[in-house]
Length: 185
Image (cartoon, rainbow, N blue to C red; front, side, top):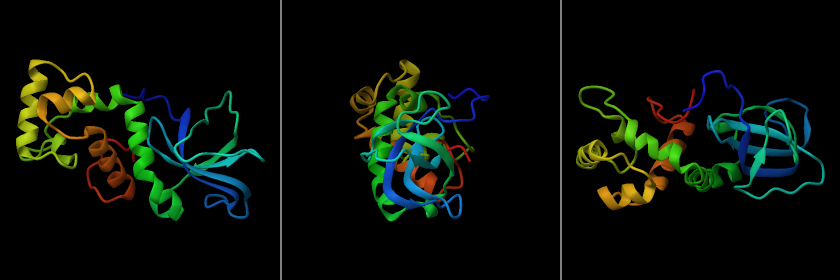
């Protein structure tokens, strides 16, 4: 979990890079623009990049107050609608990469999610997990908490748990879900 006092992202993952872009956040601002997703809070961000730098889709960049090497400034938050078509297309792959690189944080959700209502459990909000998988997961995590995505896969037979979490995160970013379990509103 993220400390409540921490408001800013330290790192972000690139979902699009426009060497000669126009800012969505600050009208009239032009330059090398990066659209990215924050590592901790999963915030969609617009970044002003340094001149003559290249970025790969999925690249992790430092955006915290100290030690930036490729980013001039964080211009602001973006909504999913404001993302470029390239950013929207690469988002699922980049989110899956982010989830895998922060495996312990996301495996913890399988161990900690609780019922939301008498009829709906938090686990069921993850695509691919229905009542059967949910009951099996609760049973297994009570015996011993899950330690990795591979552990979840082996013990419950859930295929590609990282991809399922990534899919849920993208749904939340798109604004298609009433309940948010991963993305801070």
